[in-house]
Length: 250
Ligand code: ATP
Image (tube, rainbow, N blue to C red; front, side, top):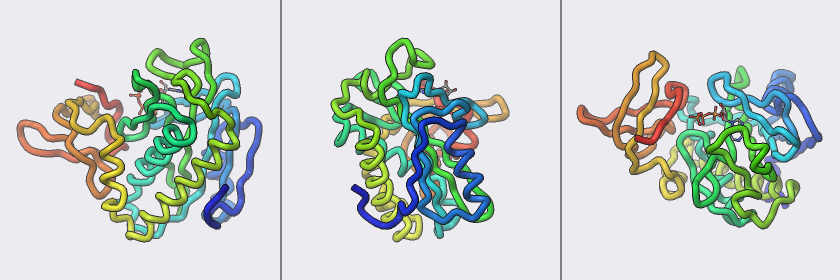
């Protein structure tokens, strides 16, 4: 069930290279806000900073949505975070799995809090954002791309029907996006909910930076632009997702 009229064009394909790449092409051709593309399998899925996102056997759910936010672009960092919030809600309430977030773009599933979904927001010039989510639905242990990964099924979820999961995800995403947009991108409407499900907050972390250096401290909160605020000896430093190569627990 879709609550509103935001998702007016929902296209589902069995397989593609990357739903983000396909939707970016549609965006260039003038597709309107609310265009959605989903796939069961991606052969060239993308992660942050040129990294890959695999869904080996068609056991995943890749979904990309085209947004044309009217809030100041500096605040777009919150799009990744609100997608994460939506994934947590769907994992907990629809699928029935334990779920948390790792800032900026990972969904952690199960008691061991392993990576079960990734989010990738990409600017689609001049005015759009393609917001993509890759969720491990029914990957088996043998299909996991790395040791600290998992899937909804392995995390004990009861609901694994992709159509049900997709509808719930679009529903949550629309509600979160509308609230954030209506507030002009002010994250106050999302912040308490985000902090409550973000496993990163309150923990010692090391942010590896693009210049090879790193910043170590306590992950304190998230700011107006969606940057992680790290408290350290000399004060507080907000770090943007684009400037963090890896975020490691300390
Ligand atoms: P980190 O490697 O520190 O977790 P990240 O979370 O920022 O970095 P992303 O760009 O979000 O990395 O995701 C890409 C990484 O996710 C890949 O380098 C790969 O290790 C891992 N990965 C790829 N496909 C999957 C998948 N289906 N499930 C879980 N992890 C995956």
